[in-house]
Length: 513
Image (cartoon, rainbow, N blue to C red; front, side):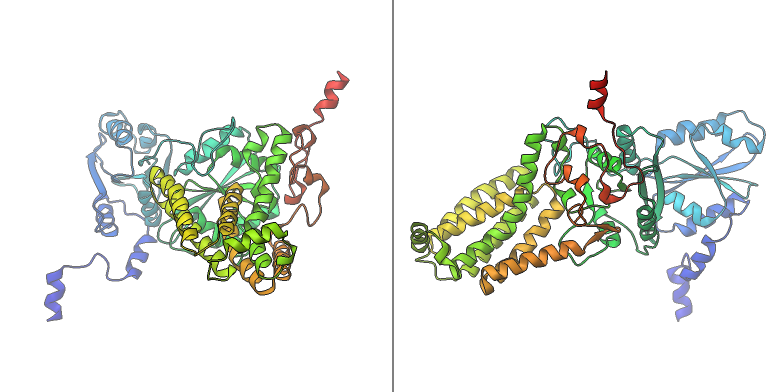
């Protein structure tokens, strides 16, 4: 009975995965008909596979195979089929010159042909040849280059953002650094869905040990596919059990170019608009490209606000809980009476009150992000006002708690990096628990634990807390403050670049003239 069922359901394309692997490691056959049969078996169940059989003027039979939707039809019709059908050539080895296309490569293994077709390339089989021609015909839907919404430029910065095509992203970076020292090393990762990962660096500036380390981590990955930049970041970072990001993700080519010039390297993942920057330090997450578009005094003030927002967002709710629960004697009497009056109807302890309002804030924030922009803004503003006022009138929270949560939210929005902001949102809750249990002692203990954790982190061998620990005085010119550009003659020593000199002493040169 099973014998008849076998013929009724049809013969499978491959009896086992082992047979498929055996074919992928073989070389192609000189017969075009045999090769087309192998192609149809390899790509069975994939209707996008397109085969065009043609006869050359030399009398040979040829076949062009490609994946519909991943190729440029104009290039195929104009630059490949027309020269083959109407071109004048007599020798079999002159086919490369007959095809009017940029890059042509001869392939012999079926594994190379499989990957080429899935990447949008076309394969030309020619009767009597034991190798096929791999033709560059990739083309897929692309969105226009727009300004990234998560990294808006307030001042006169560029309004271009990365897109989902690695070649375009590399081209945008090269526009900012048109130097032959800007090298690109291409890697392929993924067992099922292979993705191209480009490693960009300045060869005469980057630290070679850090470069070799990140290349080794990427090439050693054994995963089905890399779909987002965040997945790659988690797979290659030093410590996964920390709320603090060790690699930065940017969607701005000017930001990526700025980090490259400092001695870092950029990791461009095809099919994703985010570019990884490494190695990073804690202070680098509080720097923005707008800091260098305004006067250094204003930039220094804004940067101090960034650091202040970090501490306010973490410790303000915890300080409120500690003061109300343990240390109310340090509060001025008029303010204490006002707080007591507002908390008169609240039946919950300060911890429950604070956690409730913080969770409401987080839900409003997520609702504003997930909904369309006009509706999200309405939910954020109206929802916050309505829920806060209703909670106060119902006696669930006090007025002072609403003020504390509002200050915390505003301070968290000052942090310029979203990855760092996510870490701050998580740290706030254990700090509130410590404050409720131990008061100021718990807050100080939590602060010491955070500092000790920051001192223990590394980013590809670079101390995360640099230039504070280890202390690098030369790097302090662009850490908490942003001193004038003419004073920053050297690259950051913390990331250990091979070439430290970034600019000459221009002021002294002008005085000599």
